[in-house]
Image (cartoon, rainbow, N blue to C red; front, side, top):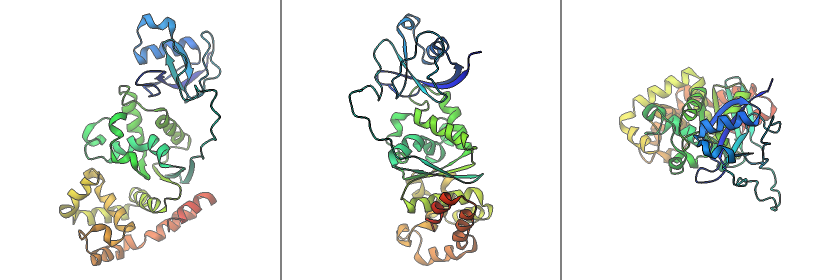
Amino acid sequence: MVAKIRVSFCMNAGPKRGVVAAAAVCDADFRSLLTTAANKLKLRKAALSSVRLFIWRSGAELPAAGPVSDVQNGDTIAVSLGEPYAGPAAAASAPAAAPPPPVRWHLISPQLAVVAWPAAAPMNASLARMSTLLEHPTHCEAESGAVVGHAAQRYLPSSNYEGHNLYAATLRAFERLAAAADADCAGSAEELAFLDEWRRRGEPAVVIAFVSGAVGTLRHELCHARFALDAEYRRWCEAAWAARVDALGKWLGALGYHATRRADEFGAYLLTEPAQFWRGRLGADEVRSLRAEPPAARHAAWIRELALGADDDGRGVIEAAL
């Protein structure tokens, strides 16, 4: 019996080169991959005789008959209409680049993963559209019911984030919507790889991502983790926000947050930013008073308790936010 594999498909050349257009589970042989690619990418029958299949990034060409042992679960298959491989490994004469620093996953608890990225660019290539689906005022799932396209995402705030807060429901919604979308909205290789890793890590309910060394961002994102996991703190944020929504709602909307996310963001900014951040929208006395209320005053203790449940590496990451 031929093994089954889960792969993604992209075009090898043209304006959509390297952009994942579809994903599927199929047999690990050339004919099954070719048939699936033809259906997913809507290739003309006349073009099938010249199609060549490559593993994106490695550039390895798949044999046109029999099993394809080089293909692994999660690989992206580049579909050529006869042209040579045009992906990132095509320049064989170029010196091999040093491998990028690793993305480090810390499973703090079964409900919470903290992911440290070496730089913002690879993090946002993987996560920016997921954050847009969660919180953007017009492009979030609650408003659009769809994932934003790759081209439009380049101009949205989350493409420049230093941290992200994501949730199991958001990740599943993104995967479902991207799988049903056209090529411009389909999941990229980076996005699908992140989802695969999240699943391999046990699908934690909350995923906090940040650029290594951005401690201020980590502090902010951990507030979002607490909002999701600590019911008392969540109720406090919602009550504090409800008392100020008329004064601050438009402003937080202009910062890029949908109404459903503003109580959470209000709490995170309140606990991590200096009084000057509010530019008079909240007075210094009001900020001090809110921070002195029990759920806010216990925030450092909550982080310490979180750190105690982590392994040694994860504990060091969490304690850096104190």
